[in-house]
Image (cartoon, rainbow, N blue to C red; front, side, top):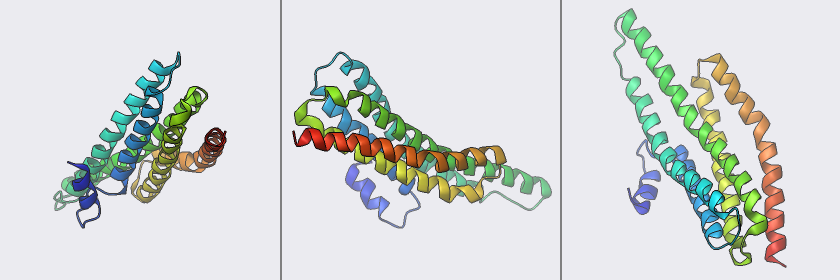
Length: 197
């Protein structure tokens, strides 16, 4: 799907893509911005950092698709027959499994957004001064991906019946956002300082 087709469909009444898919794409865009900054910089760690960013870019693209597939699958499971007790039990289990997958995708997107932030932080001291703005865009887009992923985790929480997994999700969304914001603001402050130097 071309980008203009994606955004047109995103803004339509089609069930997919939705915000979760947009979060995945935003992660890919964030990683790509940082990747460009690395490719124009000279450092002993450039190759290692670039490999990490390529991985995150590709994962972002994949998560964009995975989110759409997860939601479509959840919708399909709701259509399963529920006449007999056996059918009802099977349907309930399949819906629960599908709901978990719907939450796992934004969870992974958020985790990768955090990893991207750490990766940019590691590389920033070596960044070509003319590409600082691209690195900063990577940070801001990573933050957008992280924050939107948190919303997509929250909206799925009521459908999660696995108490252990639900507790893991709740812990993640209560402990990580503040930590993420602190690191993000520190990196962006440094970016502004370098841009104004």
